[in-house]
Amino acid sequence: QVQLVESGGGLVQAGGSLRLSCAASGSIFSLNAMGWYRQAPGKQRDLVATISSGGSKNYAASVTGRFTISRDNVKNTVYLQMSSLKLADTAVYYCYVSDISGRYWGQGTQVTVSS
Image (cartoon, rainbow, N blue to C red; front, side):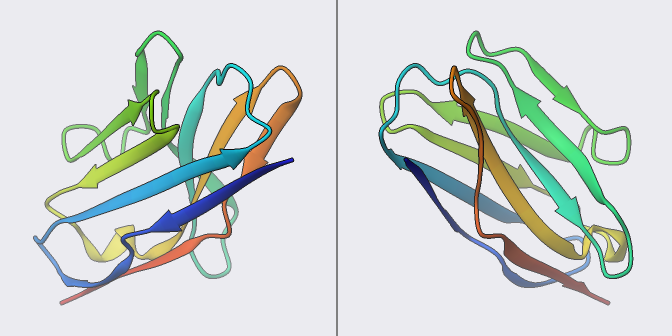
């Protein structure tokens, strides 16, 4: 079993920055893709960013140029640096990691951007 612990969410003013972290522990083999989704109230969960085991990154168009995803393979941790935050970025952010057994999800962390 794999457990994910997210941290770094909170309340920030528009234009500010936050850094989310997601640490994986447990029965981890070789981690493949890692990433972040988000879900705003009343909306579906949407992809924010992904990073492959080789370091290739993909971003949603809405966050490109403002968010940066990274990973530490020694710590089994994925990060999301968020800058120039907008009101529209308010959501619960969920991390995931994947290995040969499947995909595992974090519990979610709230990010609220205020005007």
